[in-house]
Image (cartoon, rainbow, N blue to C red; front, side, top):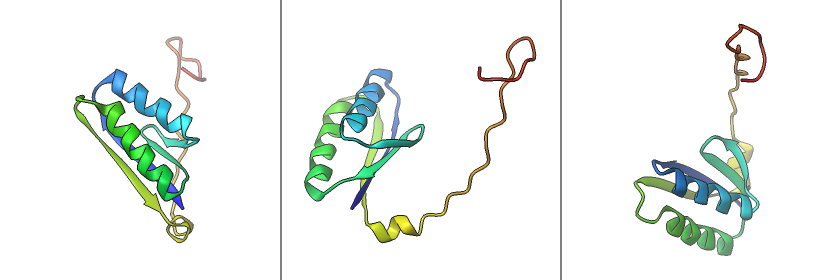
Length: 95
């Protein structure tokens, strides 16, 4: 089984706690506020509780969703690369 964690959190401190918890659980960031990894039901329950504590009283929402392998196999990814950003002198490259 896989696990998907998605969040929208207003507090920087709470968001950092959530990111750290996801990384500590071995999840991989696939978008700015989305992590995915393999997990069993025990890890899903533990991670859900860790997320609850990490969010605390901060405004926001966290979704911890189990995904079965078949669901992930049917994933469609639509991707266009981000254009390179220019620095203040007009040079291409990472900002």
